[in-house]
Image (cartoon, rainbow, N blue to C red):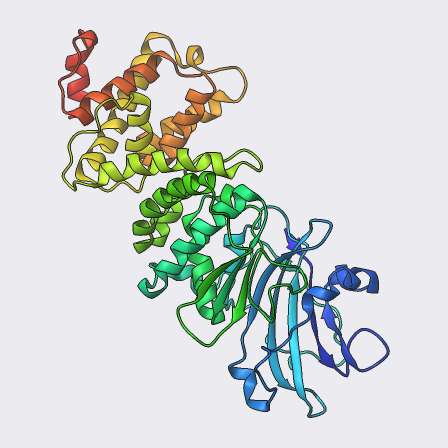
Length: 437
């Protein structure tokens, strides 16, 4: 899928008759003036108020990476920077590379992940005077160096925790904005970590900027960076978030979420897998989902408390055994690793038994179940845990597996709890143990 983009700067070449501030080059969707007018405010860059424009500032002036929305709800990603002198030797030149409108599939996490990506334009010295047309960009947008980070800088951890909490409260209120006062590279890292520590549903409405001259800049990003030459950044809510009893209660739940998710950021990829597995919130109702997210993170935390844990918490249902033992590939305890392997074998046994007794056709609905069943068989035979679980979950959700779901769940529960095979297996118990060896 392609996406439109443009490069805006002070130039003697480009669209329009007069030299000066203009679109220097653009893809086909921005070849007419009306398309540009829609985003004209989003490409404007201003140096910090205390900054004096000199030739040397080009290398140290704050850089903007912003995900912004227009009044009609369209979203755009823009990178702005100070370039130093103009083509005719005057200080004050800037350049803005704008991409969009973006499809809904491009998340805030994707957007901040492009920080310092190689495809962002740095200038127009590579463009011939007659070059006005740029080829479109291709989605997904290639990430930059942040996306390769494996852990969070501990120096920034308190700010990330504060941003997660403030953003969840902001989502509940559906009002207010968050300011981050600091250096753009620190702010970008904080945004990247927070977007990886929150489920996609929680940041679906997030807009942000790593640097604006003031919080009321065009586009009014909900999380706005304002330059201050200090580290780590300071977080402020505008206006201050309420301190009534209801808000205090919500913050206790939010604090529990932060306490569970922050240790995971020692491994950002693990964090991403965990939070992406949390259930989606209803539209506009993130706040009521936080309690559920906390409960699910607490389940996972209990399993990880003891590296040699052999038992699941008392009272956990067999459905949760299946979900936690297989679907959450981030669980690294020895018991869970062993359980995943045992469950693969148990599925193989269950499928063989079902196929022999009733035939595959009796288990599969007439719609698209057969292809999913084949995918499950192939994944189990290959020993591929995650594809097997995905296919199994799809079949269970479609009602295609009933008796065998009970069998596999019972096997899972007994193996994880370390109990013996249930007597209900009868004559099949011996065969099951042979297969499972």
